[in-house]
Length: 211
Ligand code: URA
Image (cartoon, rainbow, N blue to C red):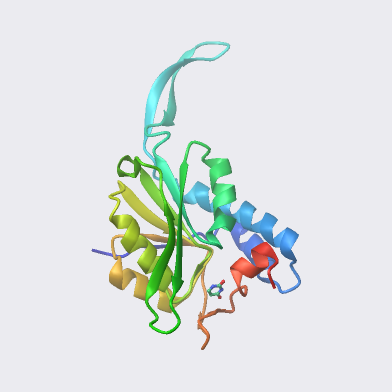
């Protein structure tokens, strides 16, 4: 199986990404840019959704018009807490999507991943799932989240982030080669603290103004 990485290099995405990376971009603008970028990502990520044709009446005539074949069949799962930044724009563009949340942290002494929150709509088995987290850094939380989410048997899973480190992509695809990664950029590398370089810093702190 070829593990897929799709870099969304649309000029609008790249321009907004440059703005959001900058240290002088404060919470209000950071949040707005994250929302705008997430709408553009949602546009690309849903590019392969199948269409069906339905007869409609325009003011002038009747036509067979395209509509989503599986409207109301998507679930977006936010990895807490920074995933919330990508979620807002995505549900604005895909208002019929249901939303799930997963919260994980790494227990410092054992380094095992602990799940502290997990809530999904009941009918995920019939849904295409987008798992969102702005930063694919080490890949550890993305791997654990997707492992847990696979247990719920969604129709498909895509992972969507803003920035990815090469190490994170490799690690993630070693565990989940079947899950395509959509990102606006593959950055250079991780630093010794697990931050993406050049990156944008701590996405959660910048989104919520907690630093
Ligand atoms: N999480 C972040 O918020 N930023 C990084 O650079 C890496 C992980």
